[in-house]
Image 1 (spheres, helix red, strand yellow):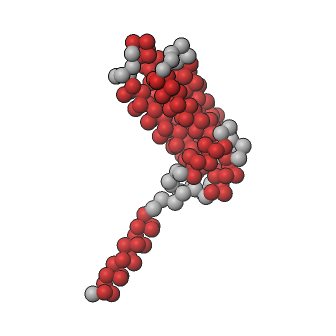
Image 2 (image 1 turned 120 degrees about the horizontal axis):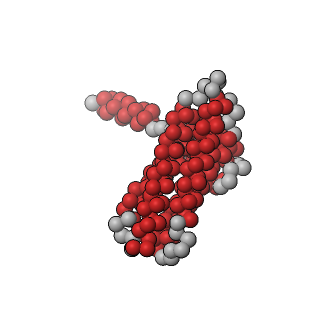
Image 3 (image 1 turned 45 degrees about the vertical axis):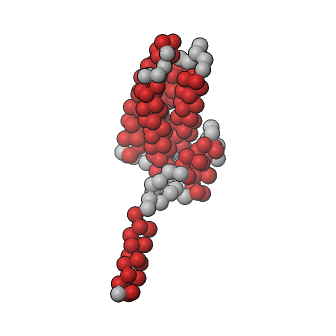
Amino acid sequence: MATFAALFLILYTLSVATTVEPSPSPDLVRSSCLHATFPKVCVTSLTLYKGPVTTPRELAQAAIKVSLSRASKASDFLSGLQKEANKREIGAVKDCASQISDSVDDLRKTLGELKQLRRGTFRWQMSNAETWVSAALTNEDTCLDGFKEIEGRVRSDVKKKITNVAKVTSNALYLINRLDHP
């Protein structure tokens, strides 16, 4: 009976160990993020990413996934904020929600493009990806512009969330720009 329990424990341990997603290589992350616009944010967000990442292309995809996740969470946050914003804030919150929704769409298109990179169309695909991520960044900046004349907690909460999204999106654009082949 003890042998069965020991065998079960060994098999269980092996199954748990093999189902955990590997994190990106710390060396790949550090060397890739070294000259990013926000290197500390780049290293932290991509070191915490759970998924197989062994190449610069996979790292760029991971960066887009991180940005997409944070933009989606910001979009959900803004939807909830519309219910508690005052009359003056509601317009800025609605506009921002629309812009972040557009960012989410642009980041989804970018991820799809990065997953399909091919030799014959690489430059065209990279141009598309760079354009969409740049548009996402512009939307994030425009969202913040809508709060310039507003003071208070809503503004500070939105600024904190959207600035975080913009930082990871900027870093994702940097990592995409570093790709030079499919």
